[in-house]
Amino acid sequence: MTMTAQILDGKTLAQTLRAGFRKRVDALAAQGHRPGLAVILVGEDPASKVYVNNKVKACEDAGLYSEKLVYPVNVAPAVVLDKIAELNADPKVHGILVQLPLPAHFAEAAVLEAITPKKDVDGFHAENVGALAQGNPCFIPCTPYGVMKMFEQGGIDLSGKEAVVIGRSNIVGKPMALLFINAGATVTVCNSRTEDLKAHTRRADILVAAVGKPRFVTADMLKPGAVVIDVGINRLPDGKLCGDVDFDAAKEVASQITPVPGGVGPMTITMLLANTIEAAEREAG
Image (tube, rainbow, N blue to C red; front, side):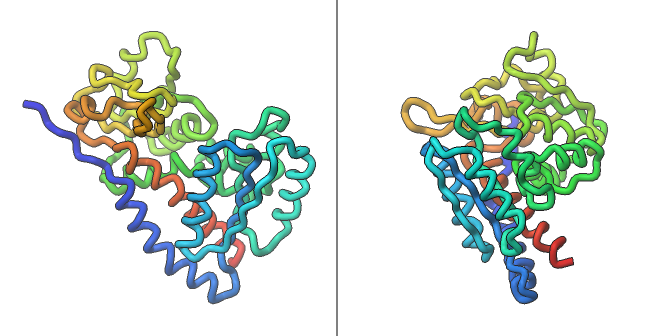
């Protein structure tokens, strides 16, 4: 008998969480601390433009103050660094986010390090990465944070479980692995070149795919009853979106699975709002 996995619906969870944010934002605004987010975009990358516009719209919908700062692709890095210094000192702004990737003439690490850690709502500053590694996070990167909320909502206990992460990026793979470690899971971090990847993934009680390759994870790579989290967003030649997991086949093997779109995606921006509100609450004391 095949079972069909329960769908972990990020869209509905995101709406529920955002409804709760509204009260916190209104309370802060009443004390003169309306949470504010500044988003910096360099260049004309179409996907980045969409992400930035979605972030700004989400802020406005939740009652946050937002600023969108757009620079041409050939801007001098010093101009952007000066703007970050200004935003660091601006009491209206509680969160600063630089949309990645940056053009090649930027030193990405230097830009991320320029953001004051207490406004680093993406959680990419070395100080915040270190705090997360120590199990005492200040800001958790938004995508893995959203995944943790989905585990919470799905009643998924991570303690003692075998967790496998495919992908080792600073944005998803590494912080996801740290969150699993902090939650008491046994963690394996793989990548697209891991030898005998299937031997690792078939042990996974919980599998997170963040590799950026369409339908890379096939049903035969899964342990029956696994929880499958698909972080990938890939556009197929016909224009349709798909994840890193072959969803239709995987849902017959997994116990719980996230769809693409409508899974992890809506949670990422939701947790960006959560981090920004939290930054404002800390500032308000």
